[in-house]
Image (cartoon, rainbow, N blue to C red):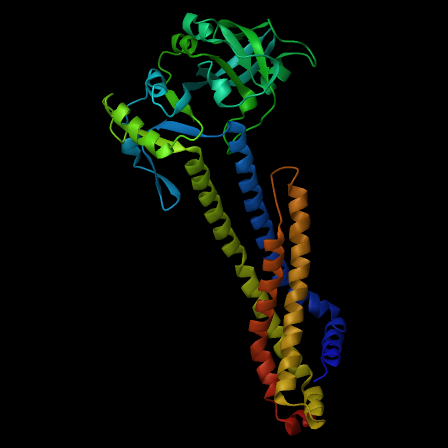
Length: 404
């Protein structure tokens, strides 16, 4: 068999029926484009996730209220009853944990919603009560000013570090806000720092909308506000397992049970969220892949019609010496080329779609997506091309020549 002649024959059959070819490959095109786009979104979110954890800093540990468990790499929450009846964490627990040998710095975090006012300007904010170590733990970068000192925590000074969005909404462009005051919860705060823009994390609140004040102040303004987490930075080379074991014993002495708190490392949290995103991407891609099956059925139907239309041609080829294998291979190659063509067009559409979405949400298309798009489309073409190819190969040459 001359492969060059084979591909020429296949290509001529495809080119001579452009509209039919396009309609045949449309199902594959849509399926591959959808899968590529969803995988690009999944990859983009995972890359975004890594970037968000880098913003938080390294070697971080989170002590969270309620019971969260990681099982098989997946993070799950206990029943709502357990979470609701969990004992609240106390601000003093960070001091207890600070004494553990593995801990470099620790701070409890209180957060609530409020409004920041300056003159006639007003802006919705997330008000966070922290201690001065927080900025070192989070590796925050300042646009203006600097964090407060330990003395401000002890004395309950009304000072504030504001996020970038708060700054841009309450002050004129380029205006130095240091030393100026803002009103939060009917209390005046002196601005001592402005953070560089960082955006949101994991789809949560935008850190640029935060206003940070000493924890001793927020507890006076909002007595019922609860500790959202305790943020801890471990010493270099420290064992998280050892810390978790000692911290659990220490918190148990404060009349807390293992259902009242969860200790998670940054890596555990990152891995859990990655698994969730990966599973979601896989499920969505599987749903989108249904159109690939529809596209494969379309190829099979059109190829069966093509066999009927070309019955006389098949009989003539057999009369001139073509074997069953030659006819089988010809139609299989034609089906495979149709699948690959749909895969190519689908990849281009999916890739262009991901580029358009990049300005709104993160996307990323890699070599894995390229290989998958062509591999799957080729496989679909071959699998659904078997039935038409066998039908063509099994045609009786005499009857085929008589067919009109």
